[in-house]
Image 1 (cartoon, rainbow, N blue to C red):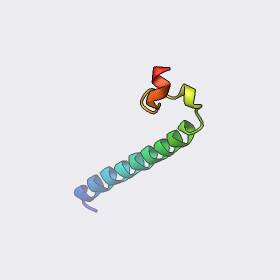
Image 2 (cartoon, rainbow, N blue to C red; image 1 turned 90 degrees about the horizontal axis):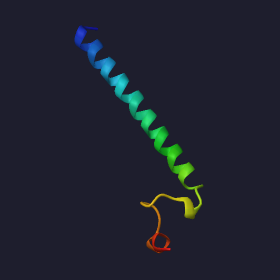
Image 3 (cartoon, rainbow, N blue to C red; image 1 turned 120 degrees about the vertical axis):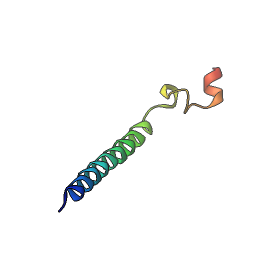
Length: 53
């Protein structure tokens, strides 16, 4: 491999690892968020009626 090959492989492996990590974090966050009671959800995911109460 040339120096360019090592550089491309290094960046490629790094980006793939970061992408896999982000996907796992978002999947875990989605599963945890579904277990939060509706009264304790953040304002972005609450319905309008719950905000006014």
